Length: 144
Ligand code: RB5
Image (tube, rainbow, N blue to C red; front, side, top):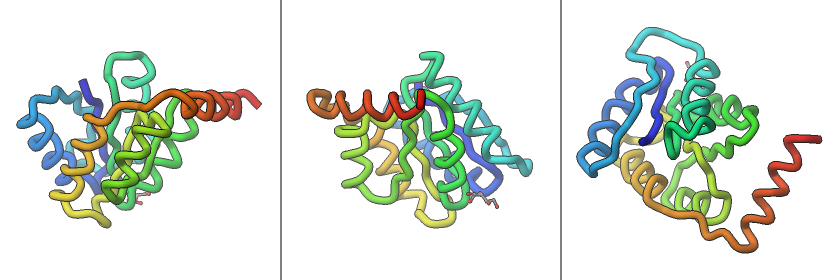
């Protein structure tokens, strides 16, 4: 299950991603917004809680630039949110950073590219090994 949420800037992109990912066989849980203006940190928290509880494997957050969502999500302990703008970074943030949330900018990316990046994000595994030590060091930073 993939948790997905957006603010008012990302509604159309969220719909496009939900369609594209469900056509590929993924199940999605929509945490809003459906169109009404909202504050992106509220949506970020809802999506991240789904990931942290284990109800969802990964999260997708969309706002105008993806930046506000990534700032908000990365304040939440246990979340490793990546602002994804290209396929290489998207692949490697899964392989090396074990990112559990991706953030996308609805005003900076087209829906076709966003759907391609979302598919890469949800299908690429974490490499582990030396990268696990670095993930653990990120977790240590949360406790300082
Ligand atoms: C909303 O207008 C906009 O500020 C928001 O979607 C996002 O881009 C913030 O980072």
